[in-house]
Length: 121
Image (cartoon, rainbow, N blue to C red; front, side):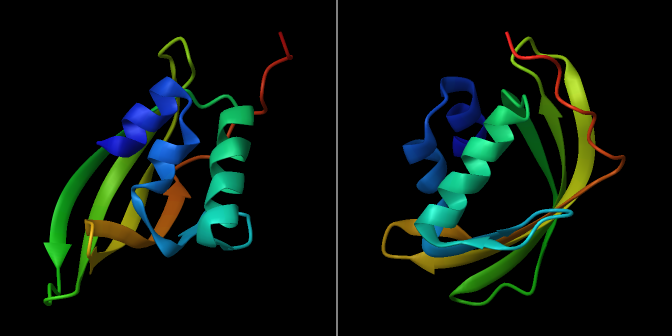
């Protein structure tokens, strides 16, 4: 998945290609971050929090129409050394665009509070 590759490579442009231009991320304990600037801010903040890799697993698709489908799934985030930081659940609303299916809305919720980032190196 592009999100995984974006985190491994540190590539915000690849991360943006996963979303529609007007996409939004609804992360826990944070305001909605929308549009290209909001999505880049989420990506940068996530990287600063020590996330260097992700794993998303789809559990099912619901309500598919010609233009939208909702995906339920789970995810896990890892530090750059590959150690698990946290797990959670997600809902994605995918939208069909001229470039293919892209995430229009993504809601994330962790199963436990995120640990405080370690000291800067």
